[in-house]
Image (cartoon, rainbow, N blue to C red; front, top):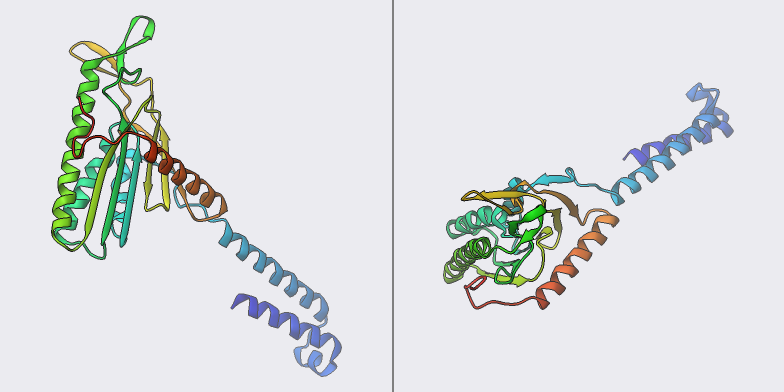
Length: 265
């Protein structure tokens, strides 16, 4: 509409410059200048509109891990849902995810298919993180902490898998939840929602916790801030595609534990 008005002003002004009756009717003296100014406005408007449509930044660029609930709720409203996670224990995602699946039991809405992929460390292996804080701050493997994290992940896996089976048994939708194990330090925290939105942050590997008077290195996932990438805009499209491929490739490579066993002893 704006472009049409600007273009109309240009045409009228240009006509008034060369056709006297039109110029007299408009009672103006600088028709050509006004017409050219209108043309410049038209071009600038068109370019700004194109720029704004091609470069759209998300309303927020960073969120706290404690805010994952809103992203889970929004993702679960889609007809086909896919939620992927790579990180430490996934507790900050598990809490809103289990609540969201419970809600689907009562009201599935338009949701028909849900796939949940969770990748957590293989806590059966000796690890630098989590570990005991040794002499000079050096990490010492701590089987007691690894077993605690292992048990926690197993519990999350069992609960989510049981919810998935209950939802599928209703016949209104199909839900699949699976845990897989990767080796190495839990450095990155990544959540991908419906392959359209990526949240990425880095754990604080220096974070410590105390247990019975002993200090351990233990990343605090709920304190991790996450950067947001969406498919809006060329830069976001590329970043989201890269993260999707990375998690797809890693998912195909990492170990698949026994059904509903999570990390095993």
